[in-house]
Image (cartoon, rainbow, N blue to C red; front, side, top):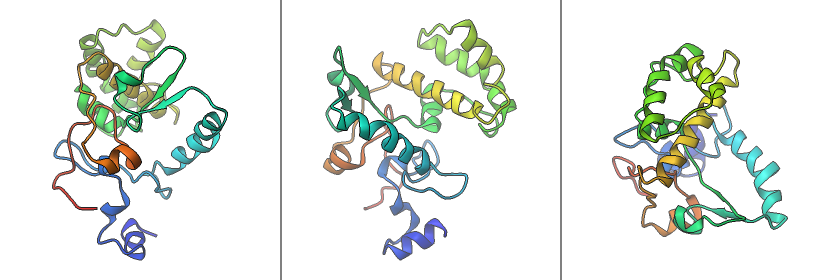
Length: 199
């Protein structure tokens, strides 16, 4: 089953309609995988399902003090003592926002290690001082194991959040009721899909 075949079976005019607006290609980066796609290597659906099923849904059902960006408002407005505010980040978008250069696949330790100078530069611009353990991980390309990519992505996400909180990136949410009430958006992303496509 390909994305194109799946889109055709659903009556869509093309596979881009499987994606949310924030996942589609922009003039600044390629498209991300559709959020609900679970087949093959380039997919995020399984991780999303696991996070929602095993963590987010039970927490919300238990009445945990969670706020969801952008559905409940701007990021700064949602921050309050005793609450946790959740926002989505996208590693490829975060790299673009932060000016981090990755010469190759992020699955390869050698490429992640080569990104160390631009990671250090991004952290310096944000006035983030890494611990010795984190500094070692950055220099080592986050390790040779498969989870090295996850550690790399986690740091990108954290730096993206810091950049928005500190005002280096805007807390941008498109003025679109569908996005604000249903699809959501990626933190720090200001670029809309190019060319614009109708839903």
